[in-house]
Each structure stands twice: as structure tokens, then as C-alpha cells.
Length: 98
Image 1 (cartoon, rainbow, N blue to C red):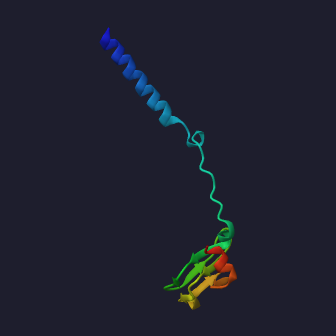
Image 2: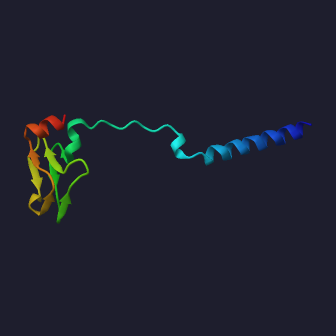
Image 3: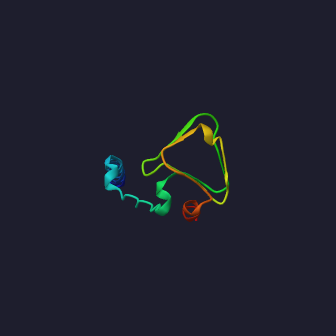
């Protein structure tokens, strides 16, 4: 009798495990989106230096701005194609980097 109870408990545990694994991920709680505030228009936002090597393209879904604050050094900028604006230690970069 004890062995039959153990077997039915094990079968129940295996069945429940398979049901849990088969649940679609949409059933599980979704993580709330992060509010990016003023940073959402930046594809790159740095504090000290931005260094580019080679030919690059910078763009983003929300915006293609590049920001740097409090630093001023954007090395390799001449070989970058940017879809937004460059903000080097200006008011926009300063507000967004906080």
C-alpha cells in the first residue's frame, strides 16, 4: 500500500512538472517597462569619452542622438554617420546624463 501511494505521488509530481513546463510564457507575469525619461532619444549616452574606431552608423528606434556629459571627447567622430544630433556637454546631454 505504501509503495502504491509513493508511485501515485511520484506520478502526480511528474504530471504537474510537465504541465508547468508546457505553460506558455505569456501566462507568466510580464516585467513592467522601464521609463527612460529624457534618455529615450539617445542611441549613445556617455559620461567621459566616446571612442569610435572605423566606419560606424549610429541610430536608434526612439532616436539617434549621441550625448556626452560632462566630458567633451568624441574621438573618431568624423567616420560616424549619426541619424540624430550630437550633444557634447550641452544642456540636453547634462539633463539626460543625470
